[in-house]
Length: 129
Image (cartoon, rainbow, N blue to C red):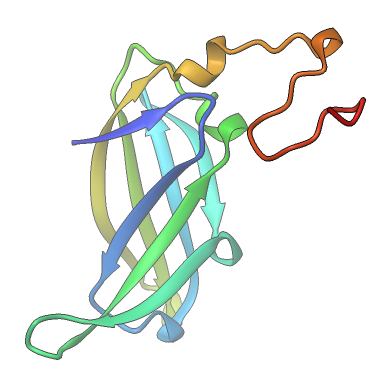
């Protein structure tokens, strides 16, 4: 089972059987508790063509969830993600469905004191130190 961390960047990868170039439209739909939490449209899906061990082609559809988007999920319930394609003639092709846990991330509890002018490794603080 996959895990979505609230307040962190998360990535989902769906495996597609058919060439996505033949799709009129596509969307990744994220639901939780019977409600739609997030929909990522076709322009927000990254497609990569790959080959399996037998040199047969397949496509990976990658979807990134921003920390703000991941924060929309409730940490106490399971979520579901599904990629749905619309083909010529209005035919809907529902793809794989993934079930995922939602967990709080440590990033949600990190607080930096701006007055202390602290910087992350490799960055300079405002006062140049």
